[in-house]
Length: 157
Image 1 (cartoon, rainbow, N blue to C red):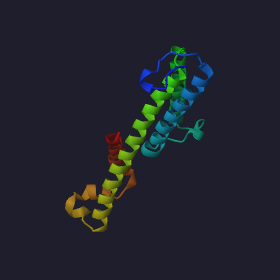
Image 2 (cartoon, rainbow, N blue to C red):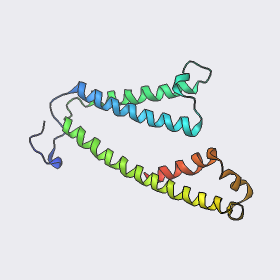
Image 3 (spheres, rainbow, N blue to C red):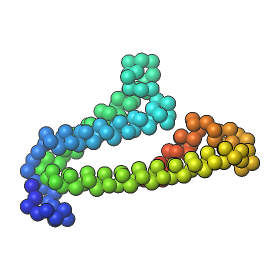
Image 4 (cartoon, rainbow, N blue to C red):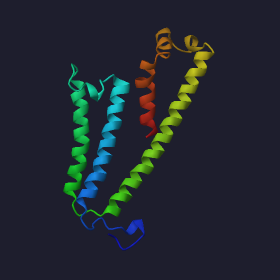
């Protein structure tokens, strides 16, 4: 544990706390796997994980993502056994600040573009502004989510 309260002067080394760190980083790995799994299920029509023993082998890919998320977190803890908890907390806090900013801008961009698309659709201008095929696609959620929403979410980050 560091003797200073200034986060700039925190030492990356401290008393070993492998169980606490494994739990914390494991939860973050599980959370990351959950986000990736949801993106694949909602946006790319992957089967849910509950169909693991069904016909679709893509459910095993989702299970592998969960195992990889937890495994990477545990491997990180085992490779850095003397890392201080406060140093880890600062790194996680910095990442959380980035994640919150990214989510804000992703929602802002997606909301603005959705409002424009809705306005154009309600006013009946889709056919005049876009080709006939694109006008038909802009009404379908299966087109808008992977082709418009996901790139805007990435742009937000």
